[in-house]
Structure formats: structure tokens, C-alpha cells
Amino acid sequence: MTHRTIAGLVALPLVLALVLVAWLVPLPYTIYSPGPTVNVLGSYRGSPIVSVQGHKAYRDGGELRMTTVSETTRDADLGLWTLLAAWVDKDDAIYPHSVAYPEADQTEKQDKQEGAVQMSTAQQDAVAAALEKLGYDVDRVAIAQVDKGAPASGKVKAGDLLLSVDGTRVTTPEEAVAAVQKVTPGDPVRLGLKRGGKTRTATVTTGTKKGKAYVGVALGSSYDFPFKVSIGINPAIGGPSAGLMMALSVYDTLTPGSLTGGAHVAGTGTIDADGDVGAIGGIQQKIPGAMHDGARLFLVPAANCQDVEGADHGDMRLVKVSTFNGALKAVETWAEDHDASLPTCGSGT
Image (cartoon, rainbow, N blue to C red; front, side, top):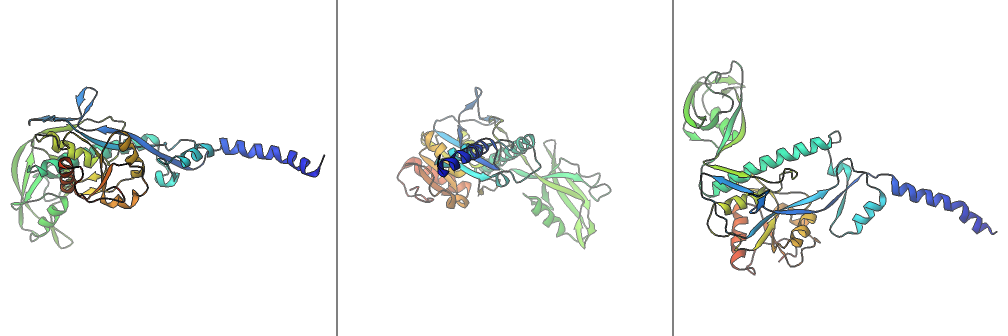
């Protein structure tokens, strides 16, 4: 027996052991894959996803699809071969576990709860953006807490909506604080409030804090819509990234005619009540998911444009949007002419 043969026989168990370790030992990575898309103009469990009470709803066809990412869970044990299979799949992506789940001490249950809160907030922001585009006033500033013994104590209650300060409408907590601080400390300030659906005025004599007027309340964001709009999506889907597509779907439902001209449009992006569209994660996986589900146009947040290069989109157009108005105009323009010139990302012309 030659020395080479002996060396091979000695090394074989070591190689087999290494292969076994590579197969069995989990590695600290997470896999992102294209997830299902959801037509927000469609139904969930037999009911319209966008439901309306107190206003006519228009169901005129077409699809507006929100997109998702299938992500291995925080506690998933991923071996080398699983990760290699994802690495060779052009639609999958591998990220360090610490990047996908930066909150190291959080549990899977907490991940789901956080995602549910983000989705609920995104739904309210989407309704607010759509209604404001339609010309409705949407009240946004809520009294979250009244400090004990503060100037506002006994005159303002937690849960009140703050509409105005000295007759000037306020739409954000920051505007409300700035308006109060314009008052000379010790002078009265009139707060326009809504409580239980009824408006009222509370006059509060301001106090002094750090040389500026204050009334002693903590403010938060809330909404009081002129009629009820609900978005009923599968509760297993969480996060804020469907905001833009939900806002477009609410707008389409509240206006006659098909926004998409009966065609299929998909996209992603957060949205706030002012209609600003924000960046999201996993767009490389959302684009092929939308293409495979038949979308012909995909709305990309402007801040994600640098992330779409190389994404598998076929002949689906990738359109750059930064605001709700811009997204609305892009869809309307494309619905009239699929070859119309539109702001694009990468090669998605």
C-alpha cells in the first residue's frame, strides 16, 4: 500500500466528518425569498380587503398588488447546503443574521407583534394619505397624556384630538408644540379639540418651562376620518412596506373607474399621511415575485432605486416614485399608454 493511499484512507474520515459538520451545524445567516403578492383591490376570506362605510365604494377591476418577502425566522437553523442552494438561486438573498434581526434579544413572538403594529400603523397612514389627496381634512394630533397638576389638567383629556391652537389648524405634534411656544408664558391659549365626535374649545393659562410657554400634555399622532375605511389583510403579513399600495387601493376604491385601466400593477414602499414614500427592504425579492404574479408595472421607492440593479423583472417596468401624487400620476399615465415615458429605476424602462 502506497503512502498516498494510506494518507487518503486516513483523510477520508476527516473529510466525511467535515461534510457532516457542514451539513448539520447551523450558520448565522438568514435567507430572503420572493413572497406572495396580494391584490389589495381583491378579497380576503370572502370580504373586500378595502371596506368602506359612509361613502360609495367602486369596484371597477384591475389589480394593485402589495409584495412581500419570505424570510427564514429568527430561530431557523440553516446549514451550509441550505445556504448554498439559496446562493445559487438568482431570486434569493443571504444576509447575516445580525442584519436581518438587529434586536438580538427579541423573540419570534415579539417579531410578529412588532410587525403587526407596523402593519396597523401603515394602514392608518395609507387611509390618511388617500383621503387627504381626495380633499378631506384628516385630524392627526392626539393628546396622549396630561401631566398631573399641569396647566391643561382638568381642561384637556387623554384621547382628545387637538385640532387648532389659537385658531390655527395643527396637523402634527411638532406644529402644535411650536404654536403653543409662540404664546407669552402666563398668557392664555385656546385649544380646539374634538372629543367623542364633538368639537369644543378649552382655554388654558400657559405655564413656563425653560423660558417657553407650555400646557403640560404629551402629544401623539392619531386620525379621525370623516367615514370608516378598513383594510383587512391576512394578519400573518406584517411590517410597514405595503403602505403605498394600500393608499393607492383606498384611493381607487373611493373613486369611479379603474385606476390601472384593468391591468395589473404592483409595488412597495412605506407611506406617511403627507404622502411621502419611503424605502423598504427585500426589493430584490419583491420584484420577481410581482413579475411571476402577472404585474406589468412595479412602483419602486426612489430611495431603493440603487437596490434594483440585477433584479429579475423581465419586461415589467420599474417606475421610480417618491410621493403618493407621483405614484398616482405614474399609474394613471401608464394605464392610458403602457409605452408612456415614466421616471425609471435601472434598466426597468
